[in-house]
Length: 424
Ligand code: GLU
Image 1 (cartoon, rainbow, N blue to C red):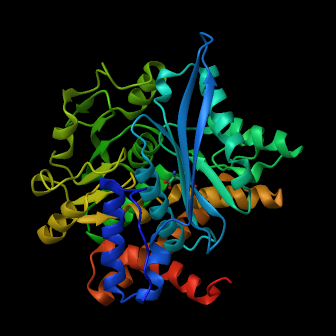
Image 2 (cartoon, rainbow, N blue to C red; image 1 turned 60 degrees about the vertical axis):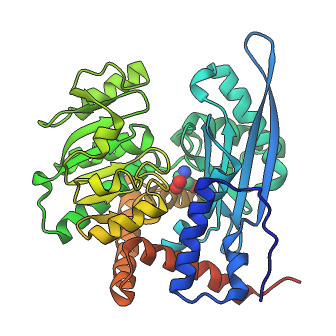
């Protein structure tokens, strides 16, 4: 019998949700008790204080984290989030999901996540650069291209990755592009990485529509979140011929039954940073967007937006989880019982991002670069394989699609731990 003393370190709604998902999956596959806690809890966690000189000369100390959940199946991998509501528990939950995601799609990685408690929109460009560099500086002893490879997440982008790569490279004295992924192409970023998460989501949506025999031209989509993931998903879905009838960000939501002009929305956000005051549709609330009648609902923002309150009221045929953890554990059960909604779980649905991060890392380690076509062809091949394995697992054990995906991911991590044994 394994016994752990679990402190309150990670305690939060979102960490409890990730743990409940794990427990359910572990029960479903009869994971031996002796391996459970080792597989479930984060391996190690770093908390750092980040003093930053502000433009007005004052100093603010921000708090940052990096949680390395699993290093058994390869270097830890996962994004860095800059958001004012980041908590250690959230970062730990996101790290856990990265472990299952990389395992599910067969990448030679573990799982990690980082976060800094900051609203990046409140920082000047200079302050953002100093914070990004300082965070990387503090992390240097704990990460490396063969230890832990960060990437963008909510609130961070290519620019932030470039500063982080530069900080690390200056420290070691030569360029180390493989220290982070999601970089600009000019310094070792991969073709297709920027749009990878959205492109993967859109690709999977078309595959599930085909399974349901719904023509893409008849499908309507509501997208919650218009950051990198939501906007790139919109572009790709628009390209496939689906009609995007609603979009939103944290400032506003818009509905247009004739279809939102995505190019116009992108141009608007490029100039205004947010969707507020966009005139391409009727303004609605974010809550209304989630309950719109549509073929596909794609939550592409933060965790826990589909709740027991709105789950019974959803009027979509497919939920495509572009965000990590958008559906609470209780809402999941309601959706399962309804039987009229196909849910593409986060660990499958948004895996395109980390898959192309993997390609970027491979290209960096080999100094051999691929075309966009090569990247996308390889991405879609991995997504097809992962989807097939999830559908097979779902049918074989009569699991929900989420349970099928989680059990596959968790089993692989546990198998690796058993194979490697316990050191010393
Ligand atoms: N932050 C993204 C995710 O949640 C990408 C991670 C990565 O590319 O390492 O999957």
